[in-house]
Image (tube, rainbow, N blue to C red; front, side, top):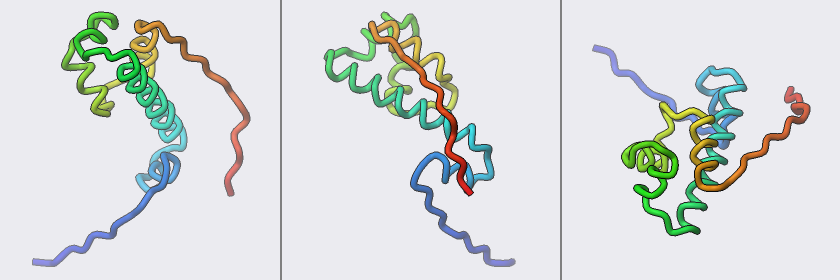
Length: 104
């Protein structure tokens, strides 16, 4: 029986995490967009003192799904869903496109 050793890796942002995991840079961008949308959603829920049930009714989804999302479980959550939830709470999401910085 051989003893295996594991190496600890650290990533400071989505781009570094994608690189460590061997994923495309586009995955990192999506994670960052979702993280920003989630942060705004949490901010709105707190600011407006909304319950998960109230958010769920406005967004026409289940309370358990909203709770899961607000707990940062985004595994099966699309960016589109986060945008629709924010929209149901009276917020608009705007997107800007800029030329990517080329990293050597």
